Structure formats: structure tokens, C-alpha cells
Image 1: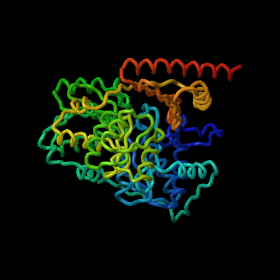
Image 2 (image 1 turned 45 degrees about the vertical axis):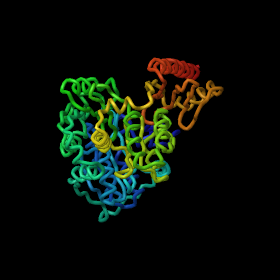
Image 3 (image 1 turned 135 degrees about the horizontal axis):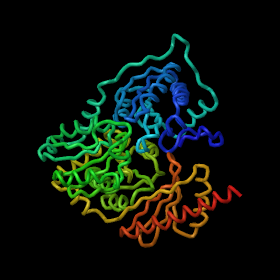
Image 4 (image 1 turned 60 degrees about the vertical axis):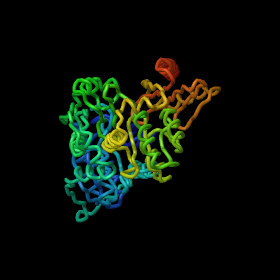
Length: 467
């Protein structure tokens, strides 16, 4: 979360880049200075820049580009494109780094800045601190007038990206199935890539929310089940084989089976794991502590090894990079397919699911039924950023007698195989709750119970701070 207004925190970067409310926390002036700090960090390198469909993205992109070129960086400008497309551009065009203007799943009034290394993966936490030190320490190095960077368009990357995905799947076999897929593009950048990709795969495509509009009029950009009722209904009404919904920047995908049932990312990730481990026994599977025990069950059944991480796509990507792991995933619909790129990629995920359906001859609902059954529920509780640390300390104090993990926030494991993860968001003033159990009611009851506990702790801390 953007904390530049409070010098006590001295942080720009949160869990996934820099984010804030447009023209309140994240202004063009700030974006210009951040762009200059990023440019100083890259030391007059060549940087790919692109953005999502938010109304503020072109404005902020121009400000960041001004900062980059002012410090001597050359810019290859992609324009509007999905995040994984821009990441692929950085890797395949062998530049020094990249910057993406996006706030991913956040509401339309937010925007953000992601910084990429030369492999397309977001920079490490240590590199984030280097940029923050440049920014807060006023160590920006502007170029002389005759060394200012230039700007060139990079207009071919969407076709290059789509072609790259097709290299990792059996296109002719998928084409023989003539799958009918409904795509919910969230009024955003996935509309530029996914329908075209699916038609190349021989699919019949029906789209909803495919007109690009940065106010997200069709639904909010986070693909949660309650936001996907229209997609579910359309899949059933047109008799489609599959539905797929994307977030605001196209790096996450949530799938709907032919019955209209929406499936959390854990289940589709588990299906990918089974297929991957069948060809790669013993492989490492990287996933955050927020993922379901289902992932562990499936990986172990197929001789894989689960590596748990803190929550955040940056952490998953860097862990994959460190371990040379070829597959990662998140419960929120992020799939990281290393042979393509070690970042979450909604387009690659959609292609993988269709490839598995074609190879097995099974419907998505059938493959889900074959998995160990857990029920996942999510919740969130508003919490001021300045209270997050105290809330976590109080939680740990209250839960110290239980079986807990503190990899990220606090995860409580219960004897009946249910669990709940409670962690502060790195991008919003909230606490997130992830509960799972062998019954839906048990998972819901855990959310209710710990929702009340969190609210009580937060209210108590607020009251103490005012006395």
C-alpha cells in the first residue's frame, strides 16, 4: 500500500507494487518522481512501459515515462495490454526492465505502478528498497539535456505473446474439440488477447464485458463468485463448455464449468498440478500459505513437493526462480507456468485448462469431482494501515495455544483438517480471511467467528488510541 504520506513507514511498495487512490495518494507529480527514481535505479537502461484500461492509466503512464526519459532511460511503449503480455515483452525483447501502470483487481478509483526486472518478473524486495532509498533520499540522477531518453512504440507484442502461449499446448488437439468458451474480460485488457487466442485454438467464443471501459461498468475487476453471476448464467444459457473470467490486468483467471459452477483457483490449479506432475514427477510446486490443503494432497499423490511461501505473486515468482521450479499457483486464480514465464498469466492458464480438457476428454466439472473435496470461504475486515501490526500481535497473543503458522499473518490449523488464514493486505486497508474445511458450513462458520474476533480487536485498539 502507498504510504508516502506517512514518513514513519518510509515505504512505497506493498505486496504487489505501488498502489493508491488516484489524485489523492497517487498523483501525476508523484508518478513523475517515482518514474525518475526507477530510471535512476536502471541507470539509463531500456525499459518497456505499458498500462491497463483504467481511466487514469494513460495519465500516469505519461508521467512515469517522463521520469524515466529524464534520467536517460529509453522507453519501448506497449500502450494498453495485459500485465503478462507486458512481462513477456520485457523478457523476449531483452531489455533492462519494465514498468506497468495497473492496480490489478482493485476498484477503478485505484491505480498502481509495478516494476519488472529484465526477466519480466517483478523486482525483488531488496530492489524495491533500493528504489525507495533513491526516492526518499532524493538521490535522483537526471540526465544532461543531450542524454535524455527516447520513446519508441512496441506494437507487435500482443501477437508475439499469443504465439508464445500456443508453443506450450497441443493446438490441433484442442481445435478438434471445438470448445465453446464464454469470456468475461472485466471491461479491460484481456479483451485484447483472450478472444483472439481462443479462436486460434479453434474455440467458439462468446464474450461479455468485453468493451474496454476503465470504470468497469460490467462488474468490479476482482473475479470473485459474487461478481461472476452473469458469466455463470451465460455459460448455462448458451450451453458452453467453459467460462473464464479475468481480473483487471489479465494475470488471473477464474473458471466456470459447463454447469455454471464457479471454481476457486485452488481447484483449477490442482488440475494443472495433476497434469504437470504426470509428465514431471518429483517436481516442486510453489504456492502461498493461503492456498488450500488440496494443493498438498494432490501434489503428494502425484509425487510432487509443495513449497509454501508468503502471500504475493512476487514471492511466488522469486521462489520459483530461486528453486528453478516450473509451476506455481495461487488460490486467487494465478497460475505461474515456468516453461512460458514464471509469472501469473491468465491467458496461459486458460490455454492449459483447455489443453487438459482436450487430452483427457473430460469436462471441467468431472475433473473437479475427482479432487479431494475442501470448501473455501473468504472474508475481509476493514483495518486502518496504522493498526495492522498491533492487530497481528494481539491475534498471535490470543492464538498462541493453537496450532499456528506465521509464514504470513497467522494460519490456524484445526484437528478436523479445517484451517483459517488471517493476514493484513499489502495493497488495501483491510485484513483478509481464508477459511477451508470439509464442509461449506464449517468454512463459513470460521469466517464468521474470526470476522467478529478481528472487529473486536480493531475496535478495542481504536478505543485505546483515543483515550
